[in-house]
Length: 475
Image 1: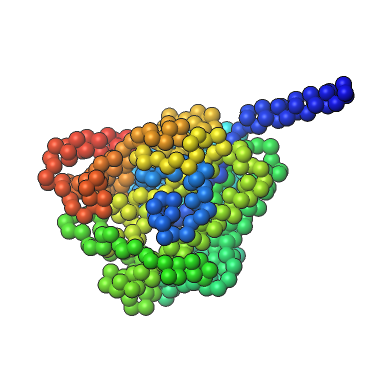
Image 2 (image 1 turned 135 degrees about the vertical axis):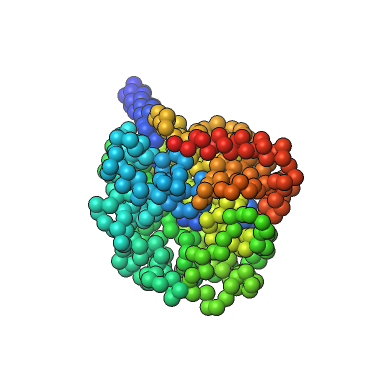
């Protein structure tokens, strides 16, 4: 009996010691970036979308339903996420940061992955995390000496398979088809086959390999960033994902009309240059719905990749000590305001999904309506891992909203081509280079169809002060 008691005490001691060690172990980070993903997800209110894996992540974490990017374009938005700083027309492309560092390295602040790397993390990126998939420049984005984010990654990987190079993978369709001339490449397709007939299948498989390697072959905590390309143009996904939308009613576009007056409307040049078989979705409602179904199929395809990555994380046991962040790099108009694409400062252009999940989160599954912005991700991850928050960043930690889902947020700031906008809980206020203004009341006009700037001078003056503070905070 005495021996049994001793064995029992030893086992309790080992178990307790293991729990203490686990609690003291530095938390890992898994950052999943999804290109051109508007909040077109069931967990964000789009009930017709099939997104079970992202929805499950939202049920296990905190979904930020009012997250806004700082710029509605890939490179500039990713700059703000990876640096915690607002960009400007001079520095919003990450490859320019590399050029700056080569000339004046002492004057450039460390990026988020570099900050974590300097604090003992192994940092790995797979797919499109910075501006180019794989994080390199050059003609085909594969030059080993042209690095978008110097000193950031221990490994920055982009499996290209039959697409030959990262540029091919970025704009690739099934079976290695590469965009050469956009007008000769179909806007969308849906081909029978496994997930690996499109580039994201290979990106995901490499991410799974990296999770295995990071969890089994390293004592250091890891910062793993995975960049999924779809639903970026051209809209290609295996047919099984398009089949999910057979017979599904796609809701009408709530604000399909081209806006009047001075706005950031544009002619959807990126979208329109593809082969559209002579059709224009602004004039052909049947074609518009077909486009939206293919976008939805790409969302479900991206969702499936997220599911594989999260499942692997749980399979290895690392999920018990990992902070997971899912982030959309900007919004995307699907005919809203007669725009098919990004690059605008309407709500649809800058509103994107953000989900943060970690094991000891309280009130899991409770979403928050707090206004937050992309620059907040860097300080939040520092706060959650116990690292010092850099003094140079513009963002604010979202730990208060993670602790209490009903905690209020703060004003969100976005910009594009010298035009600036802020979003409060009630208004969107935009100022153009020539001084013209847009003001929309989101309580009464959620689709921003009526500019009331001229009718509300007191409100515009107050919001101008807030916007000026944001502009002046750009570093």
